[in-house]
Image 1 (cartoon, rainbow, N blue to C red):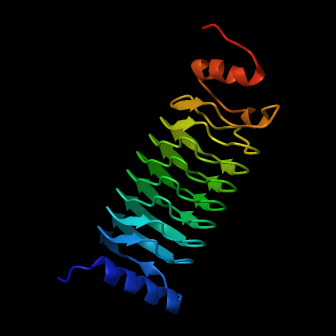
Image 2: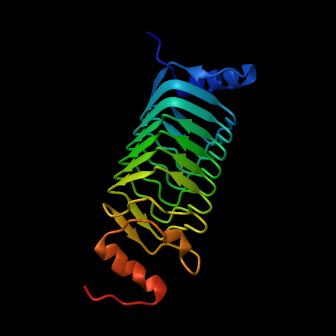
Image 3: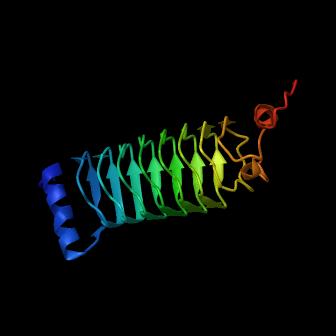
Length: 208
């Protein structure tokens, strides 16, 4: 069986884009694409393993029933992208721009999204597990039925993002950047230790 090379894979993607057809029902491993433009690409029922999409532009792309495992999407542009029933496992997404994207019924686990841009995103029925979101921007986002398990949120920009109903207590949650008064935090669940640290936003010191 012929082995698909990264260059052949890229050619296949460009052909699909010209035809406005989706990439579907495929399994791809160790594909390496860097700084390629693949805006509005449509992907359905595919699996990507140990693939690199570094610095690529995938603005307005659509992903349905897609799994990314051990993939690197660092510094890629995924603005206004759509994700439905997608799964990210052990992925590296440092500095990835997801501004304006939509995530529905997705799972993200054991991944790194440090410095990523989630501004204006909409996340619904999505589960985040053991993932690092340190210094990610999550401003003016909408989160409905978002479940967190052991995630790290440090120095995040949550400006105008309501956090009501979100439970941060199983992970790390400290030094968020919020409004004054910090209305974004109303209704969020935190641990006792986290609450003591967050009290500093009100100028209060807590002795545990």
